[in-house]
Amino acid sequence: LGRLGRPTMTEPIKTQKTRVCYFYDSLMGTYYYGPEHPMKPHRLRMTHSLLSSYGLYKKMQVYKPHPAHYQEITQFHAEDYTDFLRRVTPDNEKEFLTQLGKFNLGIYTDCPIFSGLYNFCQLYTGASIDGACKLNNGQVDIAINWSGGLHHAKKSEASGFCYINDIVLAILELLKYHARVLYIDIDIHHGDGVEEAFYTTDRVMTVSFHKYGDFFPGSGAVGDVGDQKGKYYSVNFPLEDGIDDKNFLAVFKPVISKIMEVFRPGAIVLQCGADSLTGDRLGCFNVTLRGHGECVRYMKSYGLPLLVLGGGGYNIRNVSRCWTYETSVILDTEVSDYIPYNEFFHYYGPDFKLHLQERDMENRNTREQLEKYKQKVFENLSYLEHAPSVQMQRVPPDYFAESDSDGGDPDVRLVKDEKRREHEAEFYESNKDQDSSSAYTAISEDEKRVRQPMPKSSPSNGKQGWGSESKNAPGSESPQSGSQSPFSAGGGSSFGGSGVVVPMVPTPATPESDSNATHASMSTSRPQASQENDRDNLGTLSKQHSSMDIERTQ
Image 1 (tube, rainbow, N blue to C red):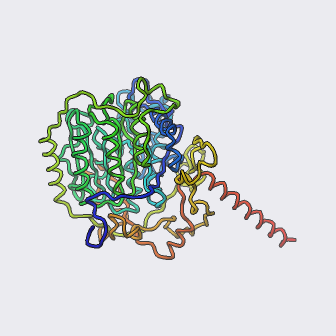
Image 2: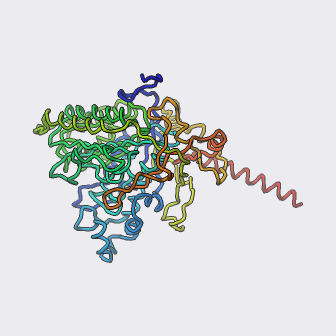
Image 3: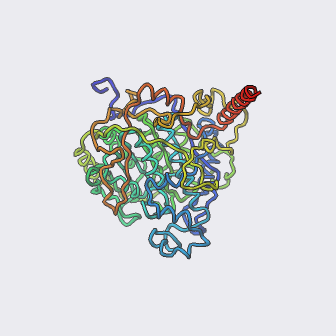
């Protein structure tokens, strides 16, 4: 314990009754990159089917994400690039030859144009933003979006099968309520898009464990540490072929433990790319589900708001195995090694087992090399000031925009909670599935209340300021002086202006604003039953007022 009797960040914090939400849209698995392309969104359908067959959906709040709006996407991405993604289709791509080369898309790149491309980006990006909003509102402890984690996309460029960087947009949302956000990437490829976006800020630390050398994207050397205010806030741990569970965890846990001690984040984003698993089509590691899942378990044990995302993974059978197992880890639920019958049961033959075995392959990571890199990372971290402070400001509001496909003006942001509901494809066996045994699927009392309209002048949107977070939460010390602008980020990126505008931390909420916030709590992705009750109640009130008006007239 620290001097104030609070838990220190050197050791994980044990928590109880973790509240978990999960975002899924059945359309996500229907998009198709092409017959020869290794990226298969179909893996999302397989993952959802497998975790459903294990009954894991009963222990989570399951939501359909909203499609990310144009104005949400352009919080990071350039408008001309986003406009291009909205317009281009397989039928008209020949009309955009100049833009295809400029933005690195098309048949001669690894980012093809396919049907529904922009809608696909909207869905996986909206799910990550929704998860960040749920964490900011304190409605859940962990949010899961296996469709997200596309970490290679740049501000004005597609890269590595990634078009929109949902991770950057989710982190920007988290920064509205957390002074510092930690991003961890265990994909076999370096998380270059996220690192580049936050390369010059000290409010986001990016940590990547990846294959380095003659391997895409070719970045992520141990000496790449950030720049300007962000110097030493980029951490890279390069690895060689064949690393196994024991060696991977031997570097992962001590490095993360030191980072948690030094950086003291308020929230964590964990990218769980499954191409670091043994047997991947594009990968060359020898990590099993147990080793991969142990990273998730370790980060969960710190008890901080945690956004868990997908990423790479090109053996679709192993991807669905991995993300299903890690969902069970998050839920503290033991699952059988024998895969239950599901829609894609035949994919898992001939053994039909969940867990993978390490392959007989050479581990080119020597103990001396791993120790050398670990000590270098510790040395870089020693140059940092502990827990950098920022200025307190009012938080920008959260708005959830109507989908572009609804026919309205795409440049007008509309608040539309009806879009945010429990996914219709979720099949509860009976009403008793919402009992105490699956408490996390039940609608909370707060969400059952009819929301009162909030004055337009109030910026709280049902959330407390960062300064009013729980005093016992790690990393919740009050921010100090910093940039004068409420949207200052310590300068743009040194990579051709690819840096992001980082929102500042809000001021502590006053008792009056807390009261307004309670009545105006924005229930992002509220369950459908609650919305129907709201409409019924509001309809009854409307009829009563109409009757009174008629009587007065008579």
